[in-house]
Length: 324
Image: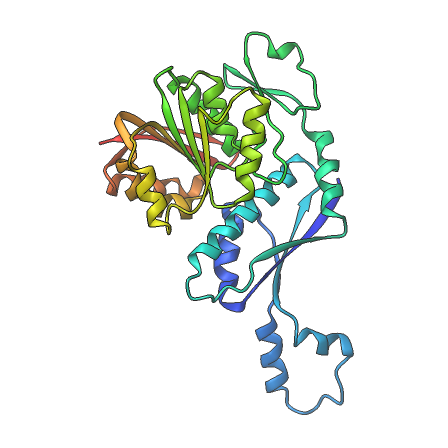
């Protein structure tokens, strides 16, 4: 297994929050180079140092950096896309500009090479009882018989369907789709959830992602599956901070609202959900560490939603909720 280094440039005040958010993505270990710590060391040294090596002196002018290592495979590509979405969310929250530039830079391999290398690990596979997911460069196998085939090329956006969080959401979703279903996909990434719903027969879908790049990726994936803009609308924006966008989305009521994000976004999102659901509508949320599922369930309950189903796999949880 090959690995690549991802350096996330930030500031000292953001280290703790960033570390928690990385854990929420399933990235357990990280290395921190805190520029403030080194500056304090220089200011407090007691004079017994005759000199400092040039390399150490350079650290004093470096940005604070949190470093993680991701595998060069489909899972690593999913993690990098999810990491970038999370950084975009943190930028939107950073109204006082305390967190620095929050950029993720890959080193040790050109990103375009990595984007192609991991494709060898993305093979067709069935999900739930109805779906069969494949990239455009692979042919379907015998497992596709009787299933709806969904072609997904994630590019730089989160969502091949291989990550446990996405699969959990797809499995919960498949039995909720009818020809009358109009759905809203919050944090759409590659568009996999909303496009899958349309492929399964939903009448229309609106998808939103904080990363503007996701708009083109989702439309491209929709086109791969013969789905046009007359049924599918993709927007860029943050429903937590963009009041105009939130108000626009709330002009309609949806039979199904999806949020495959992280607990720290789903919890503040919960109060908006009742205003988006049609009568009898369902809210499906995933991307939740199982250790935090109770926090999300409590936030949903405070917002007038009742959890009706919970599904767990490999440390992750997905919840289904309806209006209480």
